[in-house]
Image (cartoon, rainbow, N blue to C red; front, side, top):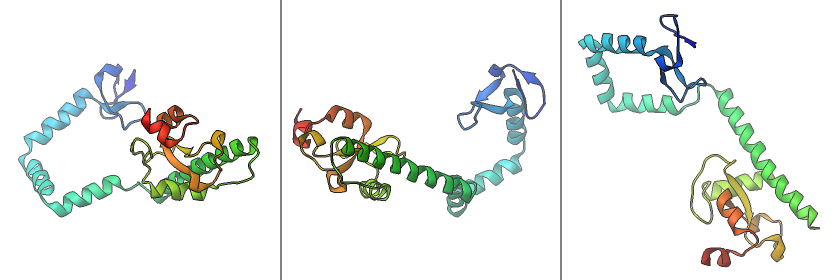
Length: 178
């Protein structure tokens, strides 16, 4: 059961439209209230004409698109940037830990990983899959540790998890050929 934000009545979840942007997955207003709002809008020609004119003006449409892409406030954007750098630091730390277990003393840091991912446009080196979410991308050593590769940023490339897992300890030429 869910309470409608417009009429205030308790209704079953089937009485609400799906909305992926809401944490509950449902529109806050019930279908009856949404349909009534649409009917009122359609019955008022002035409002429809105003919206039509607004949508035709390229400057207003561009402003609307810019507002849609812009975060609500700067703190949300800074929080995302903080999470991004934390994830990239974690990837560097994981590579360093693996190298340490194999006896290497070479280290890479999160800033180097960020620069590497930025330079490749967050694209997988092997399959060109692009992702802005760094949790999808992994740090792959082109020459694996098992083949004598070093833990340096010059030996690393961004790779999606699928390619990195299937590459295993093969060289790039062996991976691409089969």
